[in-house]
Image (cartoon, rainbow, N blue to C red):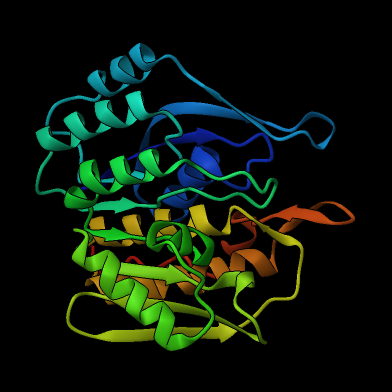
Length: 271
């Protein structure tokens, strides 16, 4: 039977990130995606903005999800504290499902970040429901409140995030990690594991974080163990960057359809 997963997040006009890339990622992994939209991102003349949907619309979208239909949930950009509370209420009603929380707090397009109140609410209301959280390096720094530059510092941060209620943590080094390697840091409360691939020196990275989290979610609902789900997702995103689409001279998006011929996303062995 086809697995069904819900993505809750924002809309990306470049279709590299947001619910657009989540739904493409789910389809590439042969799972069916439902969606709830929280906000819209726009970038006219490189002026990046986020526009919240009314909380009542977020609530009504969540209420539209058929009871008992879900096998998992992936959460991305929320942006509004009021919407976050609606999502927390929804998660209480779906306790026990695998939940991937990508705590979007920092953007490539802007230097603005969220206030401490928003981050504290995220920790208090959503961390307890998350099977795994997937902050990038900057987001981990914001959540912990200090700079992370060494392996030891990142691993300590993962332990601290775990102690705040996140059952499993994977901190994405990505392009923010210095050197020639794309290094991610996994911690499940017992062991530290580093996932390492050669860094792709390309501009086609918009949506890499969203794709990573949604690929983890797809793999989890298909029955993969957590570390294997994460490892497969890393391979998937690496190849999506390689086959990404350049939108202009300095910016591009991951592209998943380019993977189908190569079979990177064809990890259906559990079905």
